[in-house]
Image (cartoon, rainbow, N blue to C red; front, side, top):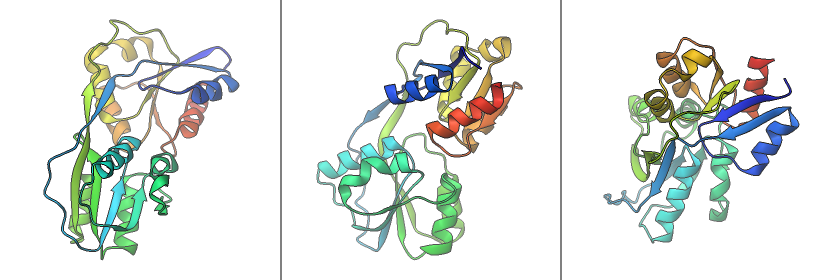
Length: 233
């Protein structure tokens, strides 16, 4: 496996690069998306017993920016996040953040339905957030609303071509769509392993290619690496 190249569709820090290098892999990246944080205009949520939902690090950063601006939000009885990395930026809130065993929207929905259906849930999210979580909670007559705290955009400048890779990492359905719009033949011609961060990203990949696609067991870089190793060994 030594010498294999992994191409990621988002930016990574040196820790991630070193992690892949220690496993005999070269990690390179070409971000396909940019993220804009802005203070949204919204109707202030009612002052009722509330829970907060955060499903991405961008959602966490957007929530913190909202609070810095003095937004009038109900104090949460509970905060739920999709994973430890998503929860990290919220440490300064000095409140425990619950991470469900299944670290995705489905895991959050199940936890809320089984444990805290009494709360009104506020989801701090982006403009492209998928509707499944809200739909599931509303099926059980659980209060739910979204507050858009960031916007996802296509990167303004994408390279005309990308270097060959043995695997490509995708972190959202929107990244998949941008990829196939910008590089329609890359995967079908070069046939790299495609690795998705979660089920909705995997579904989007499978709708665009018949090449081999795997999903990380958890939404984190370590699980992405594990999937890469299992797919290209």
